[in-house]
Length: 479
RNA sequence: GGCGCGUUCAUCUAGCGGCUAGGAUACCGCCCUCUCAAGGCGGGUACACGGGUUCGAUUCCCGUACGCGCUACCA
Image (cartoon, rainbow, N blue to C red; front, top):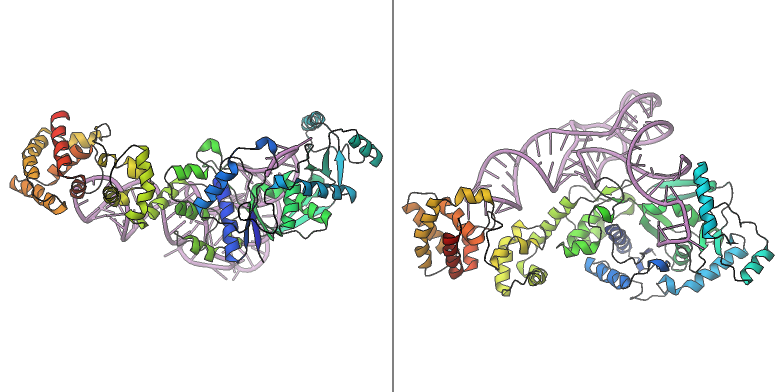
């Protein structure tokens, strides 16, 4: 039975790299009919953020990533929040002290800092100097009894090669002399990631550890911990990093990294999931659009790439447009509606649907339905007009013809795409001119822009009275 | 500095000893056309470098260079 876990630290938002890790866990679990576990790694009290867990849960739900066990779902291996399991970690730290694989350290942060600085100055690798590694049991007991602050450190064996197999990177090995005597239990009684992670993965019976490559370097410590406990380690799969355009680790400073940012900017969860799934993994390379079900069916950890992948916003934009085009106006309506409300744009469902229908082919995000189509809701102020388009089409002759055409439009009995087109083309033909000489000025007068849906359908949606008023207004006020 | 991981078009990638090195995004051109899109067609750009192994290397091995990650009582 495959059991995987997504183990985020609740820092307030969900990084898109975490989203991909969560997605791969989910896909792998589903693909193998296994169990997907959510575990909250909140052992750093200094980084506690109010509401972060709730936000995480909401974001995962938005993305369509479900869990079988977790803080909400429950399960046989709970609790699924590390801050509620501290007793377990303390017991296990003591167990390691008892069997000699860990030791108590009384070094102060100040001393560690001093040691580190002198090591750096001397050009040697900064590592704990193992000052407390061989304290006598009597000394340790009395200092602990006296209430002296202390941590528990892993007693890393000397002169040993630590090897493990990674599903993505194959065999990796580290010389134990390059591995630090890692702190396992902090002086505040909370465990570090390393201890909590191993203890939890063991008791939660996790079979595959899927996480970012930034963890590869600490995996030997984890392997050593499994050995110290006498436990069977899980299989490891270290995912390639998501990168900024300059190929550094994807970070806040260089743009949006939070899943919530993309949601708020009008990206669909299906598109973001599809896009992020293909960053570091690819089932065939001839198809690009995959539903969650298709991803599940095809996902294969062994096919995950080794090299990092640049998060390429342009491709996401394209993909989001693809998904928008696949939806119906009715499906889009509830997604666009709240955005219109944010702009105080008021209109009936029917009206908004017809606008969506016209705009669907030319948007990439949900916000484009609002920003590129504002003239459907408010009269244009012409500040968004394309100057080139305006100077080319808003000529004295054009205005003259518009003035002459206006009564004909006004007198139309039925106002729809065909009747409007007939009237416009009739006028153009009667005056020996191309219809474009009318179409462009009308577009400018009515929308204030040089781009948008086909003119006749646009006018039909807008309604006769509104169009007439706008043309009149433009004729008198637009220079 | 040490350790680790990586390196195919600008970007995401296919390739698992023999290919005119394929697809997608972006870009450019043409078609369609009332604009912008969408759609169709076409185009340019890549195997980091140097050694091996082999009849033959993008593919296997070793170096070099470059990039990235880790190097906390953070995860």
